[in-house]
Image 1 (cartoon, rainbow, N blue to C red):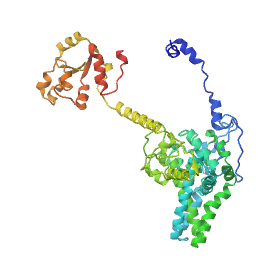
Image 2 (image 1 turned 45 degrees about the vertical axis):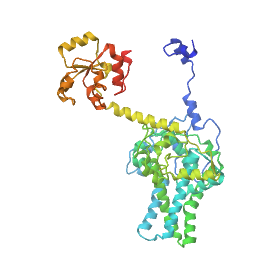
Image 3 (image 1 turned 90 degrees about the vertical axis):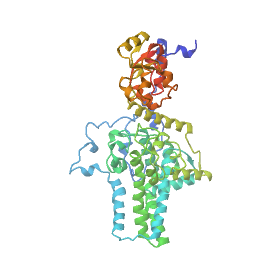
Image 4 (image 1 turned 180 degrees about the vertical axis):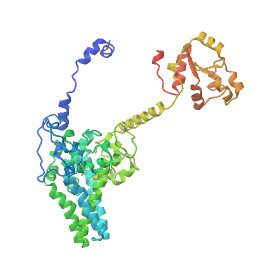
Length: 489
């Protein structure tokens, strides 16, 4: 006997054998997932934690699932109701300045026409918007957060500088938050938890103080090992100010003689626009669209979101295949970030472009289709399940026929056609000629090759299964709907 046969689950010895297998230690596995099992470089921003909160990632011991030891002694401000006296404590004022107050100043200058918008400044602002935005999607997101490809240092340097121009935090902070998001999607530990509402996932998570009870970590040792990431994080404030405001102001001043316009439009308003577009990945990409790969979580695919996020709108695909350098896999889907990554690989600036096999992708598509089909199938009444019908032998059938002669046998299933005789499309005489008889051949092409609709109508008339033809009954009904054979075997 083979080893496989001796380990069959019904064998008591197999159960004893299985119990001897070691299980994964969850605490150790979580420590590995956070990278706390190894010494990591300490990379500190000299000006503080920009666009984030240490309360969400700084753990006080080696257990990444632990909560603050004093959490029960004093309720965090996020757990307290809003009042006139404490409302300001609920807010992250640094982020409010960056994503609300500064853009508001820019828009007020535009709306009051105190700073007229020149055509050349407008065109440059659009160009710079694109450079900053795609540095986030191709650099911050797909390169550093997901390692979906490798990039030479000149390209990484450009992404680090112009990514900072979008004022969304350093690569280290952004990548860490995003990895936590993927690890804990749609849970309280998800920084942009979509279940808390559209506004919260869009920008509420940034302007409200987070609850440290749900702090989490992810392994970012690879980010700390990148000298460009370290340099940008340590000097983020200076790099951000230079790339987001100083550089566009100087360019517009030198080339278009409009320093103030450059600051307002290529600086303040451009930053606001790219921030709002990027925030849509956390909000709209979890609310509108389809879920062709999986619907257990909120991410969705939507072409409209892709348009405003440089191709990041195919979010259901991305969450299923996060290390794929693509978001859009069909030629007609909008994904300029994918095109940029591929183009830079042609010049040797990018390499090791990662993709999931088409077979794996198709598996996900088919599984989701089957899941939806099963849900739709279960919502339909398919008539009595043949496995639930009584089983008659020939004598039982003859006895029942004496009491009701409006019985017809088709593929081993007994049908009561009493209420259908006058409705039969082929006419009453044809159906009456089959009463009390086996009409299988006539029904399946001998007289008419009946349609699926006819079989579905017939399914509601099932009352019993003939013992001698139970396999035929199961096969016939199984063509209409998937049925189990377990009750007959």
